[in-house]
Image (cartoon, rainbow over all chains, first blue to last red; front, side, top):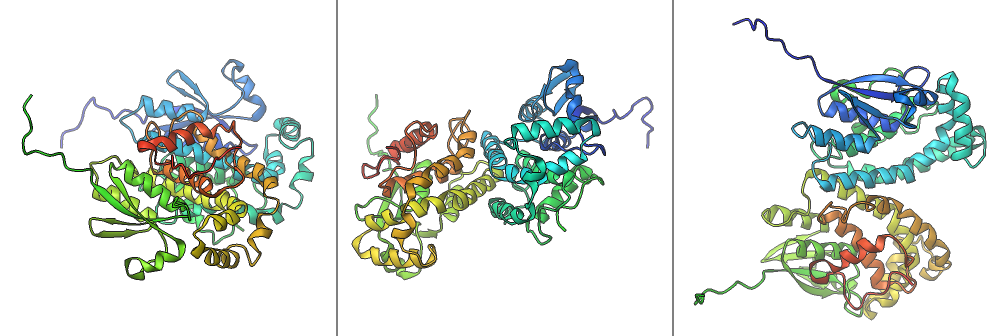
Length: 246
Length: 246
């Protein structure tokens, strides 16, 4: 066999991701989680830059209020959906996040459902866990902003009280997801697409902070969740994540 | 110009559809409505065979309990999703109902959402209207089956009482649909797909029976609903349909 003198395989190309993290360094934001998947789905390595909640204003000239933001060789793109569109538009020869315009609209519908029907009741169970696991310098900000903007002035402690009584209704509200996954490996069909990554990101958010698992051990969703966490070398297998079922 | 002597355009090919109808002949079933759209989307005429609720057992040898059923030149296909799959499989050169496996899964998710979060509360507003507008010979069956199977033994009159107080929450629960349609003409993207037909069928069901319109006149969904009702020569423009807003 000839030795390929002088030829070198180029190193795997990576995309820099500004990542919203907890005190233990684990990603919390469901918007960042889906973009970790999106970058891996396109075949790139993630070069993660961990950032705490209150440090967002200290990066990139203080121009942004939210994460994720990617830096792709100098091109800065904020906002998760805009990043997904950027990746499909810029790298059309790599696996698509949206195979058709219809898949993109469906992912938006799905995300609208998550943010109306799933995240808000889960947030009212886990907002105090989010506070507890945040970086020390972020905690005052999290308490103040959450209680004022999302909890109508009530304390986090007051809102999470009795959460175990509310989890069965949250589990039941996931039924359309179980219906969709009843006879397919992925929401994307035979291969995962961005709709899978949106859904997985909700469970990764819960896994990053929960001190009371949201799901029951025999939930049919675990088949999909476990395969999803394993994707691309285990994007969702961060050892700092907490169990989703007791 | 040469006269095309002897050549005749073949008449538009039609597919026979066993249709579930009210006393006035208007389709009620949301499963039939979506298949009317599916047949038209594939470029076929609908040859409708109107059937009342209790007459289903008198057609096709009494083998079936539900509609729609299609008869495509002798091939009998029951069940709306199976019919959609049949049409895409049998006529792959015509416009697709599902452009990708992901679009099919998304439509199943969407339908799971409709049947968990939208139809049941609407049903508890309109079940008595359904009874009132049904064929006289179907009314006893409808009252008995609905009250026993879906209303826990309560009367239809008891269940619909106070429905106007419940409609605002139903309208609010449609928010993920408004989110999805915010920047696209169709759920299918630039062209409608089966997910649009599932969604439109929910509003056509309500329009076939309601004596109290479910929506407000300025609902952003009307842009999509009106364009959807106009599709394929006006599939949703049956003059027997009732207003969806006051």
